[in-house]
Amino acid sequence: MEDGKAIRARKRFDPVECVVVGHIHYGLLIESEDGERGFVDRMYIGGAPGTPWPAVGTVLPCVVIGYTRRFNRLRVATMASYLKATAKDA
Image (cartoon, rainbow, N blue to C red; front, side):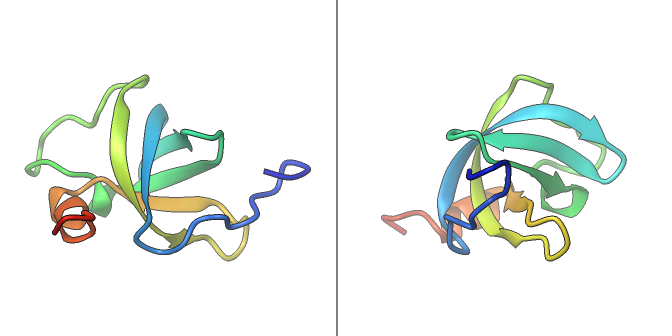
């Protein structure tokens, strides 16, 4: 992070470990292992429909989907299918 702005250091499908820092109506607010802030859209949260979202403070393995255009926020997925498809030994 530089002057509070993300520098898009990660590439699409890079693995990243994130901590859940909040819940919002459209998904999870997260912070990456190096302090980059972003979110997981509800459609990219793993688990069966109706499964409670991970609690604040939970550490999650994630995969980078990209960055938002407007605010340059990190977008990640926690779905097992994304994690499996992007695993180094897959």
